[in-house]
Length: 66
Image 1 (cartoon, rainbow, N blue to C red):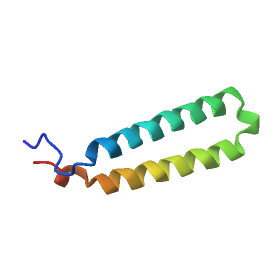
Image 2 (image 1 turned 90 degrees about the horizontal axis):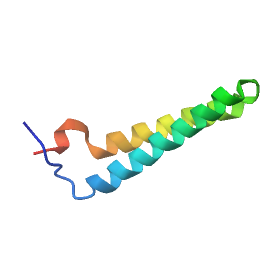
Image 3 (image 1 turned 30 degrees about the horizontal axis):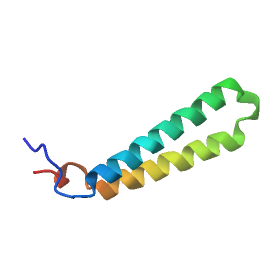
Image 4 (image 1 turned 45 degrees about the vertical axis):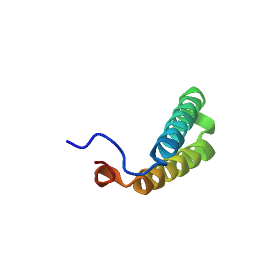
């Protein structure tokens, strides 16, 4: 079982990903609170998802652990 990340910058990337998750959650709540005016917020949520995916890929997935 691999438990420790190989990349020394893993914790920085993990924190960056956590920030994106938080940002996405906040935008999602804004969408729920004012769905009638959500077109731009939905577009931003999709951007955040893409940014989070890029961070995840940069982290290297499961292969980045020892």
